Image (tube, rainbow, N blue to C red):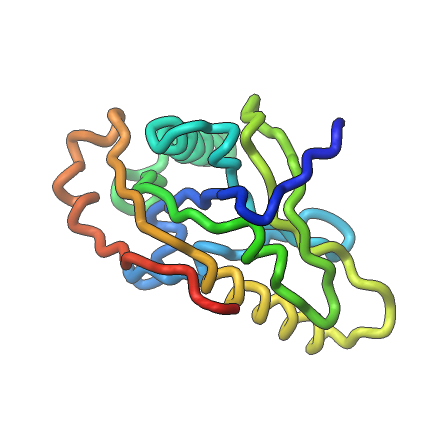
Amino acid sequence: MPIVQMLCDDIICRSILYPKSFPNDVFDAETLVKLDEIDGGSYAISVASRFLLGSDDAAHKYGCRAAVASNTRFASRNGRLPEPDKEQVYYLGFYNLRAGAVQDVKLDCYLLGIKWKPENDEDAHFEIQLSAPGAGHSKKELKEDRKLARQLIALCLMGAHRHVCTIDESRSAALDAIQLPDLAEQAA
């Protein structure tokens, strides 16, 4: 796989999936940038390259496909479709992040980077990765570093860019009523 370098002014986006980013039905920026363990103590957040997607419409289509993929995985695991409004995942839009702001996040235990990781036939898919730390860090230090990473990455969010997927148009009034804060990048 070729190395794809993100420049500091490149823009990435994070899809807003409901209800995943809404503990207790309230949007939470830190939950939006939840870190998933990927292997051997490394963590990642899925994002997409706005350069490769090319337009807001393409970013919305990418997010709609992500919601469909999540619902398909649920059906495969459970042998049934997710229950609407309880288990089903809906795409609500995306937040932008400036790659340089993310790459400027400094941590004590982990190395942070943005890596090209195509998946599900999505070449625009990248990951914000926290690389596994070397020895010498306590579990408490690692946990605190991951929490700090989520907090600082959440400060990089810009937007929201709302959208209702075609497949969800019958629920558009309810989905449009879900509050999404308009965020501006803050100094991390």
